[in-house]
Image (cartoon, rainbow, N blue to C red):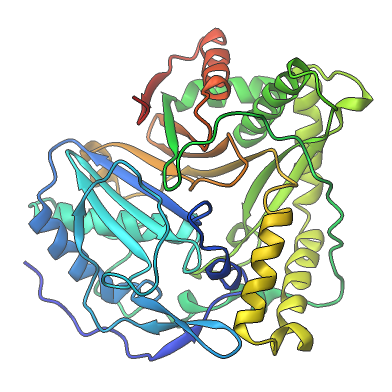
Length: 428
């Protein structure tokens, strides 16, 4: 087995512009923890997984941290422990991280059967960073099991020195501060239902053919993300009509990986969320009309100048002297109130697409599937994540309601379109 290497030297660093929000939102109802899972074709050996984790930790210094409180802001400090414990999986993943408990790492590594899962606190990275870390961890695990796996794509070379740019706050680097982005979104529709208990969430995944979905989206003249966002919008519009209540706007929040816009290799947060929405009071929309609305809105908002105005506005707020020098307890109180009043009120559903994972060819025959699971929200019955490996696309719902009608309708529609869907869920 590979020897543990000396970790890059640093004492502490600031949270990035997106990460500064998450510590104050860390509650029993809203954990801001998401999960990345890779299922192999043989049972996991926890001892080998532990060694693999020790081997990859020096390559990801942004994960080698614990949360600390300063006078004005939270900050990240080097964790003196070598790595978090490797744990057998649990029934309630994505539960909140408590900064002073256990090994104090801000991510957790689990195993169960053939699965390796990483639950990660959003304050230290986004889906892209989590995917890089987990894929590199699994690649090292496979090497220790005797497979020859080179570096490449989402698998980082664990023997190279981590580039300083991977720890960069890319929001500050690319914000131009020439224009701001006005936040004028209204409160929107959220379905009624029976909330699940605290620290629990209902996960439902649909495993389907990536070529089939790609073909259907192409026939409609849209991307896969646009196609699924329109489906979620349509299902919620129809559900709101059946509830015979005052009709509110229906919106879907779609995170955009800014590394596709700017030349950044940061492993920290670097994404912004766009909202696509329709107003049912204007009239009932057909699915094809919703496809057109979603495609037009997303393509218009993905303009670099508009995206830069968004990140510039966020950086301006962080640098505002009044906010910057407020004591941390006052900031936390304000953020708690804002979370109660406005959190998720502008989005009906959430959809994050990691897309096809770029891995060394030697890994594909050894992997059964990859699942990207967003953490539970406060109001969402449909926080959705998807990832693609080879010809398999796995679409996952995180639902904080006992009712499963939204997931059921979503996957039923796909089956009616001729797509075979295999369902997996933690529901009883």
